[in-house]
Image (cartoon, rainbow, N blue to C red; front, side):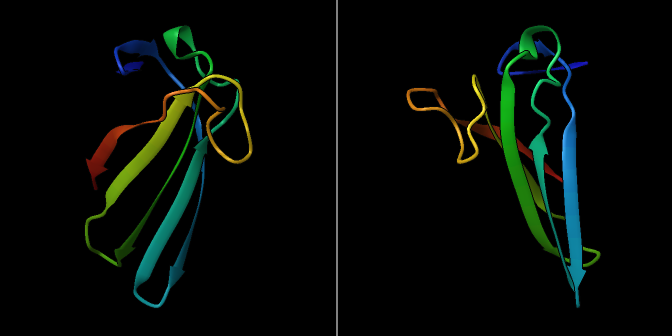
Length: 86
């Protein structure tokens, strides 16, 4: 369990990645309905690209509310503070 934007809970990500030559890339999204506790309704997606064996900046653009295939619903606030170095 952790927190996002001061909301406590947990969630699941589904990911996929590729390796082409020396370039690694990946994409993920929050599995709809997987948010628990105060993270219920969490939606989001993220990605990275990096040279093989190098660190990468990972991001997750997220929002709370109904899921839309093209991103956050109109009028919802898009959050982008989740970044980590791997």
